[in-house]
Amino acid sequence: MKLALLGPEERRYSELRLLKEAKKVFETVTYFPISKLVLEFDEKEVKILYRGKNILEYDALLPRIPKSYMKFGYLLLCFAREQKIPIPISPESVLYTHNKFLTLIALAQANVPIPKTYLSLKRATLEKILENIKYPVVLKLLYGCAGKGVMFADSKQSAISIMDMLEAFKQPVFVEEFIKNPGEDIRAFVIGEELVACMKRKAKKGERRANIAAGGVGEKYEAGDEERDLALRAAKALGMKVAAVDILPGKKKYVIEVNVYPGLKGIENATGINVARKIVEKVYELATSV
Ligand code: ADP
Image 1 (tube, rainbow, N blue to C red):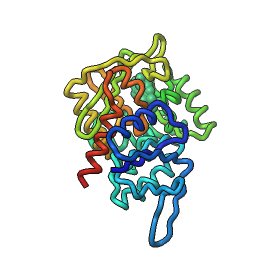
Image 2: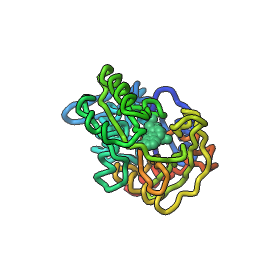
Image 3: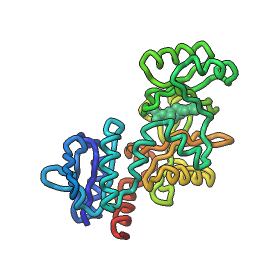
């Protein structure tokens, strides 16, 4: 069995972990850097080439597609899907999960609870809403990640000044209801129909974002039935057999994000679970069941 691992040119912790574990499960593993690929096609044939090797001749494809490559990555996965190569995520999930608003739309359509959300191209159109909304509110960049681009406004005035800044940078204005929480979120790692690892991330003192990149600390967490159910439904809604789902805890739980390019370091360190191995085994299972 031959595995094509697709990812950024620079291999970091997660790519290296997947490579290491994949070599124990597959006979052949090749790393394909997205930025170095050539898509060669005519009306009869398609090839996705790197150093003479064609991804479309592999038995399975495990993609790690960062936001900067999402459109090209989507295209590559579409070609692979056409050739019936097993992939643990749908091509569409790359476009949807890298855009916070599209993620929330997909979740809402699948009846997964999400914070009340508003999107508008201009601040002026949201002015009325800002009068009646509860503060703080959350403002987000559509394409932010690792907590960068998540802002909190404690009053209408500060919401407006953040929105003006967004408008000046030609960014859509994306406002979310603030979900009361003790500075914590839950990261639930779904593989197939299973929640394989779960951690709670605690924001550092004085910070509202629980991201590890924003100074948060992760610790092992036993998910309850409701969290498990939400995580599985969220992954399914986006067509993903490998997904990291972020949930805001509290009396009522909300899914705020689904990650197609999750880091493995935080979750493996916090839980002691070999998540990389479980991902690779799932891909092997997909490859051998076609
Ligand atoms: P990123 O993709 O950059 O991680 P998120 O949307 O996951 O952005 O938000 C980052 C963090 O901000 C979350 O982990 C959570 O701690 C906090 N947060 C995000 N949305 C809300 C919200 N609606 N209410 C309260 N806290 C939030």
